[in-house]
Length: 284
Image 1 (cartoon, rainbow, N blue to C red):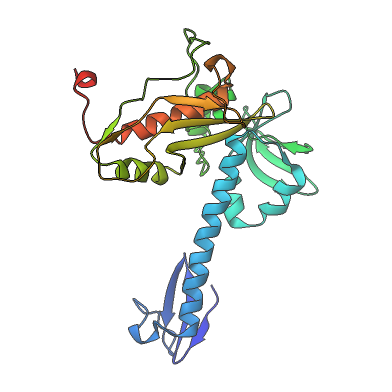
Image 2 (tube, rainbow, N blue to C red):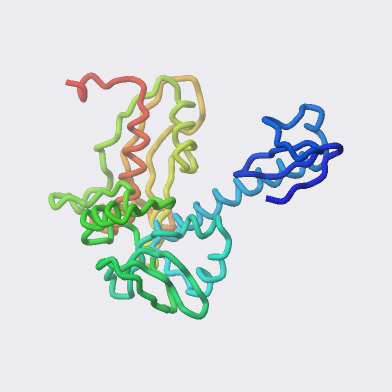
C-alpha cells in the first residue's frame, strides 16, 4: 500500500477503499470531508472504480470462454495470469484435455513450467497444452463427483462452472418441436419489470426477446424468450423458449446441442422465477 500526499494528509488504497493518515502517521477512521475533492483522493477513487470494472470484465470474459467452450491459447492464459483480476477469474476452473477428460483444477500458469493443476488424485501436476480448454459444465460427465471433490479441496470458483445450473435434454424430447413451453406464462405486473429482470440477469433484449447466444460445434445458436417489444406499464408474461440460427431461422429442438439447450433453459427458468403474479393453475 503506497501513500500519496494530499495536503496535510496522506491517502492510499487498502482493499479497494481510500484510507487516510495524518502527518503524525496515525491512520484515521475515515477520509476528512475537506479532502473529498482533492486530486489525490479523486484519482484513487477513479482508480478503484476502474479496477472494479476491470474485475467484472475479466470475469465476464472467462465465463464467456467457458459458456462457449472456447479453447484459449496457452500463451493468452499465461499472459494474463500475472494480473490478479484475471487470475481470480481463472483460478480453480476445471481444465480438460482435447479428449474431454478432466486434467485438473487450474492453480498456476507459467510460460516455462506450463499450467499448474491439482488432478483428481489431489496431486500437483504440470501440463503445457497448445490450447486451454475450460468446458461448460453440461459437458462434464462426472459433474456431481467433481462438485464433491471441489468441496473437499475447498475450491471456490469465481467464474460459475462446477456450480452453474445445468439442464440436460430429456430423453422424451420431441425432436420435431420448435419451442419449449415449460417456463412460458410467467406473469409480471408491469412489462418493464420483466425487461428489467432480463437486464439484471445479464441478458440483452432485442426485438422483444431476451436473447442468449451460444457458439457450439462451430455454429452460433441463439436462445430467445419473448418479453415484450416495449417497456410499458401493462401486465406481461414470458413467452416460450425458441432457438434460432445465425440467420434468425427457428430450429427444431432435435437440432440443439447440449450447451445451447442448457443455457437457453437456464435463461428461461431465471426469467420465469422473477414473476410477481402467481399463476393459479401452476399453484394448484
